[in-house]
Length: 179
Image (tube, rainbow, N blue to C red; front, side, top):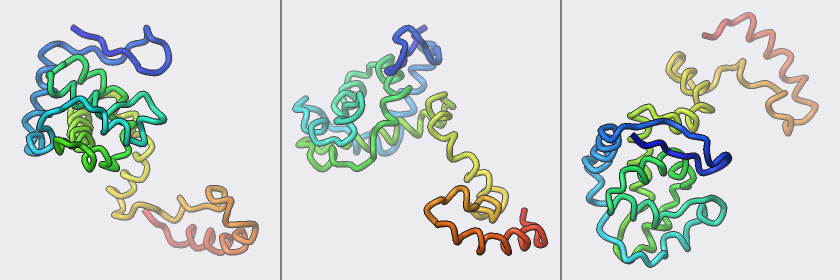
């Protein structure tokens, strides 16, 4: 068994525990993705991807590290990166545009994110949690917002006059039920 440690906070705190079989299954899912062979060709270890990455300037994140983990098939390292690091990527694909080998670390990270979601990893749940309300509204009503979600309190930049507009809308909202 391996335990992935958190990159931020208590160095002795742990996240999920994964067996060797689980690590192999996760890597197998990443590697078997149809896009995997089109995103990873080789690596000079030149660091251009990391030097041009906006996320690398602000977070403990390196596109080169992700590429190296996948090339060396470092299962524990891949699992650790999937706990937090892959979520720092802005998906701008500057790394892919600058790589002399035409690797796409951003594309590889997208595959890793999809795999984290597929396997129900806690990191994926934590990242997606803020979107739960909107997704549930979309699933249940077919619309991403319901009238009761738009209130003047949520948008203070609308100014004080919004209360005059909002008052009749509140009456209509009570009169016309919306699921």
